Length: 346
Image (cartoon, rainbow, N blue to C red; front, side):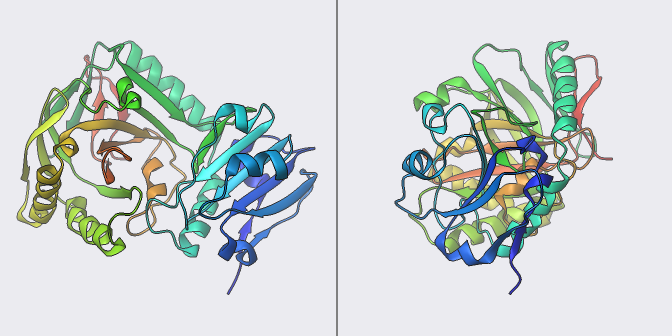
């Protein structure tokens, strides 16, 4: 079996590696499957094991001295991001989101290649343009022209918080790999309050690629796959959601072939009504990422062109068992003056 080859110098979101040490932190079973391609910039290269029950803060303090660039690939166990004081002032950390969905060696290779092609500086420019246009608009409209749906989002509310997983890392920062997402969530979700909501109203066409993340397993992996396959029916035909004050009040299939997605979403709503809340709106800006077949967490930053691609998030781990992202390439984000702000097909 060929090894997973990592080219650290090609991973531009780390910035300049000269004089630093590059670390790969991975599960024990992958230690002999990973090869680091030694080039000229880094001072040294090391691979360190991390498995369920290991303490990453201890690993940082004992095995990864500053300065360091660190790439984490742990499909076999949940990886908890370290607190800033543990990461330190002269480490940069990139984390592959590869435990919440099934992650094969082939998918790791696929997303490493996407990460090599990722342009962090292009992402920063897209972000600047997005926020400049957004700040000039009183509200945003999510429009699917084919489905004739419009949803209004009051995005200037002080009670929401924007996050960026884009651009070149600075010392002391951490980021998902591959990078490429701007997201907005209600601030209070971080205080364990899922009753706060984004101000979204109207009809929303959920048509595209689902990503079904799972939390701490209290389920069978087969169940996750079964739910994903039912939701995948929205790949070609939309689920039309009626949204009132950030809550999905009704769903219907735009075509009979999308009915299995409607039925599964309704079952999720019935089991846990918090799945009705649109807890996140994501703006994917990585146009160099190619979608990997099936249920893959790293698909989330996908952008089908330079204008980016919108996705919507339901459920919030660890409060709910799953977090569902629905990538919607056909949705355009318009300003109150109908100027294109983000999204849409090529």
